[in-house]
Length: 257
Image (cartoon, rainbow, N blue to C red; front, side):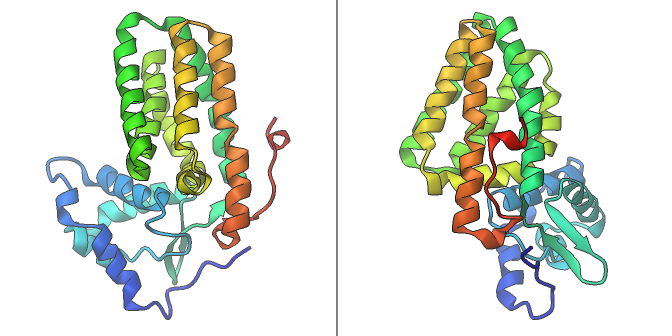
């Protein structure tokens, strides 16, 4: 397993990066801070702005965000529970490696819970729901045409969140969101490397078409084919950047089915 570096010997570039990533205008002082700090940190990890092994220097982040250490430490506890960071007493907190077994844990959640929600969305679909899906697909096309990775990834997640909302179980997104941090890093990092903006958009269109037709089986099958892209992405990242992946190995559908 590749080693996660200790804080000794870090140069000023590491701490400067944290200051560039975080600023006080990212925090709405009218709202609870812990959730906001959690989402900010999570986003920087998922987007690979903070790479595996990067230190989470509490002092610098607190100063950049103008917050006390309490909301940051509470956010770190949540991120550690999702295995996105590792806390080493006496050494520090670090962004975790991509752990293949935990990527597959997230895939199982999507494979079971989210696929069930796709079926329910098709079963309960009404024309009133069509507009928001059509807007989402149009926005995804614009982002894909621009090859805007950040925007496309956010819209991709928004599309899947809408499925939860239209299924009648909107809170299920929280479960999926918290279970798929490791998986989302693979998805986000592989997006420009595998260059599948258009393919992903086309798959979303097929899923929506079957939902609109209220064809549960076809919608579930299309969703399954869409998320099974993960296995190619794990292999791709394991080959291109093995130092980022713990237990870098070939994985197959048979590993979880």
